[in-house]
Length: 277
Length: 200
Image (cartoon, rainbow over all chains, first blue to last red):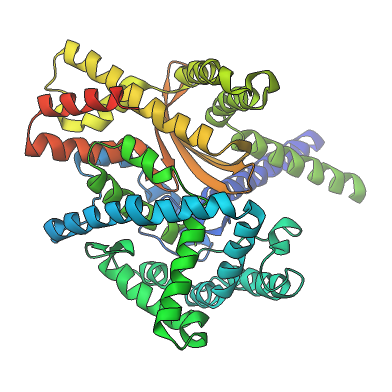
């Protein structure tokens, strides 16, 4: 009699443990509530982590299925403007080698790295509204909080943004969000590829996104003169490029059709950014 | 009595979590970590840092990577439906060519960014397939997010694609190769691949 009771309680405990294990395993592999391991399933943008998620685990396509799908078709970006885009790709390529690279190399040789890094941080700090608002528009309140803290801290202790104590001291990383990603988050596809002269790789969606970002960029309002605004944006570009000299060269060296490679890399990278909000 | 009951409960709960722990740190990540740890140790080896040792260092790194990367599978995937039409000799030649190219892509990422440390952000195992996400921190405090796609061959989890900031290297080549074959021919693709492998 007593033995029977013990067995029963043991059995109950086993069942409950199994339940817990399943529940936690389900939650752990149900990516939406995990901050780091973001979802591999692009069709699900956001779902509250409740029972449907656990159930969805069983209906989710397995990695193997996803791979077999890959065998047939790759998700490539539509490119009806290819002839024009290729011309502008060529223009941008020449612009890099004839103007941007010599400028950035000369600048890099003269200006010490710490100063260039400070300038980079300064410009980045200035565009906080773009990232903050887009975090909010994607209901990413943690990201918005991070951006707020970063802005307050870096603008004061970080000497108007030249230093990045939020990252170096508190490990709060920048959230690279823009309006194109917000549109993507709400289900708007990129439509087709556009290679803009000077601005480079974009899509129809991200072109609208860029326009939206300009509206949130304080530089748009602070600098009244158009030519000064352009000069400052060019300087930002040159300063940024001074850290990336050699990357584009590597890329060209390793690709057979750099235009196609750039277009698809742009598409995949944007998808990745939209998923990792 | 009540306390003992509670203790038993806590024990069974902690056992549950222990089991969960085993489920999380899986074999694919462990094997990948062994490989990347070896690469990191070569990178941090002070005796290999001088410029005249670059070639030796590169050789060492590529030898380590070779054990973990499934070049043939990468070749097959990058050619996709064109793979089956090739003879076994053509396949062999193609594997060598794409291996050279992907090695260069990998080395550019290793050498251009002086890796500092690697954080493992989780893996997803599904039968014989697994993805492992890592974040590479460079000495200049940049981060690169990399996702390794692996599949099980024997008792080894081998990499068949790696995604840098979401961009799959093998898949990117696949789009390029497809386009070149569609516009001209496989022979043209081989010609261009050979030209690339000699270009420095």
